Length: 180
Image (tube, rainbow, N blue to C red; front, side, top):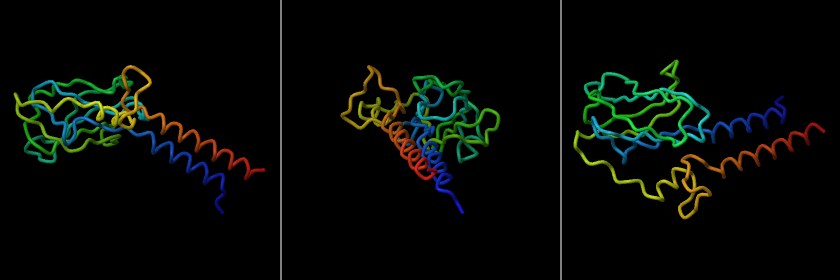
């Protein structure tokens, strides 16, 4: 028979893992890159259980890119949750590219995968600047909400942290009642 304490522990762990995810927010289907140019890589770092990873780029069309290409390593994620990258001549213009964040010791252990995106030819225009509402959405704050600091931190979702804390408290209280 399964104890309620075991069920409560599993539910608490599941909620914690579900809310602590690493997400690649740029590039994306509407935030393309330009070949051999300065490009931005963004992610939600404050909700990530991982602190180190390798950034890989790949394309489903092997005539464009023959296999995963390691671009950079991220160590102890930088706190602005982004990196500026000049990918070099290996990236040919085309569609079907994806980014992956993978375990630095085992690239098949993937932590996050981006949406499919396009690499445009050298000299193409960049996507429009991110609007305030897009930036707030990336932080987990609803539009029209002001951030408590002067510069919002992408991925910082206080509501999610509060929900985990409350759920943990309720489950602990429930477990204590069962054990009485």
